[in-house]
Amino acid sequence: MQNLPNDKSLILFDGVCNLCNTSVQFVIKHDTKNKYLFAPLQSNIGQAIIQKYNLDTSKTDSILLYSNTKGLKAKSTAALIIAANLGFPTNMLGVFLIVPTFIRNWVYDFVAKNRYKWYGKKEACMIPTPELKAKFLD
Image (cartoon, rainbow, N blue to C red):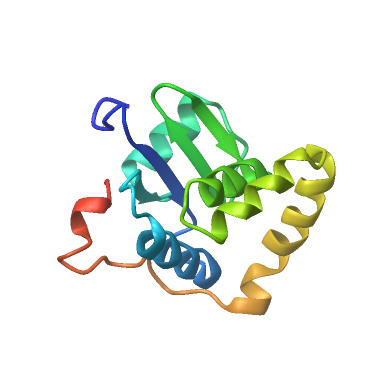
C-alpha cells in the first residue's frame, strides 16, 4: 500500500471489538521501536488489503499484519509476530511460533469467535486521541 512506509508494519484490527481495541492500546504502549501503524479492518486501507488478498472476512475477521516487504500474516501468526517485536517480557510470546499453525489457530479462532460475547462490542470504531492520530491510517 502506497501510504505505508517500508520500515513499518500495519496492524489491521476489528475496530468495534473491545478486545481488539484493548490489544491495540497495549501494542501502542509497548511499541518502543515505533514499528507499527494501525487501521481498522473497516477502514479504506483495511478494505483495500482485504480485496488485494481476496480474504474471506467470515474466516479471518480479527487481526492482520501487513508490510510492504513481508506481505500479509493473519490470526495467531500475526499476533505472535507483533508480540515478538514488543519489549520484554511480551516478546517471549514469540516462542509459540514453534507450535504448529493449525493448533495455534484453533485456540485463536476459539477466542476470536467468542470475543464479542466475552469482551463486548462498540457501536463504532475507536477514534484515536490527537496524540495517537499519527499512528493510524485511514
